[in-house]
Length: 159
Image 1 (tube, rainbow, N blue to C red):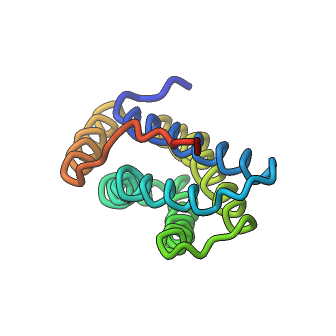
Image 2 (image 1 turned 180 degrees about the vertical axis):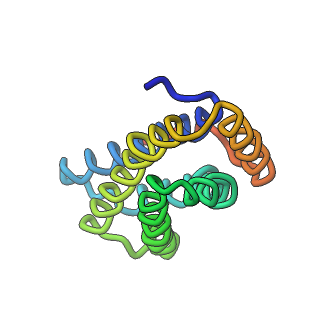
Image 3 (image 1 turned 60 degrees about the vertical axis):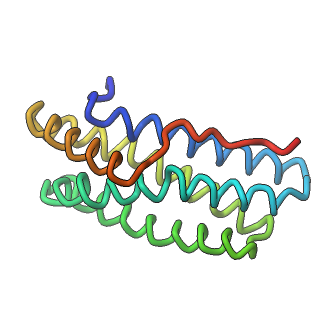
C-alpha cells in the first residue's frame, strides 16, 4: 500500500534506522571491532532523530491508534519496544555495549520498524479516514518540528 503523506516523515526516518541496523550487523558479521564507533552512531541517531521520532509517535500517533481496536495491541507492543530500545541507547551512551548487544539492538530496532511500517501504518491507513490521517499528519509535523528532529541522519561507516 502506498504510504499516506501524513506518515511519510516517519517512514523516511525509518529508512535511516534500518540503515543503522544493516551497518551494525555487517560490521559484526565481518568480525570488525567497531563497537565504540557504532555506539557513538547510536547516540548521534538517538539525539538527532530517534528520540524526537519516538516522542512524536508517543504524543501524536500512538494515543489515537490505541483507541482503534485492531491497532491497540500493536501500539502496546511498540511502546514496550520503545522502552527496550531506550535501554540500548542509554547503554550506548555509557559505552557498555559489546558485539552481542549491538546485534540484539539491531534486531530489535529492525523488528520495531518493520512492525510499524507493515502492520501499524498499513492498519491505520485502512482504519482511519483521510481527514483523520491528515490531522495526525499535522500533529506529527508539529511534534517533530518542536523537537528539532533532524531528518536524513544517515549512519556513518567508520573510515
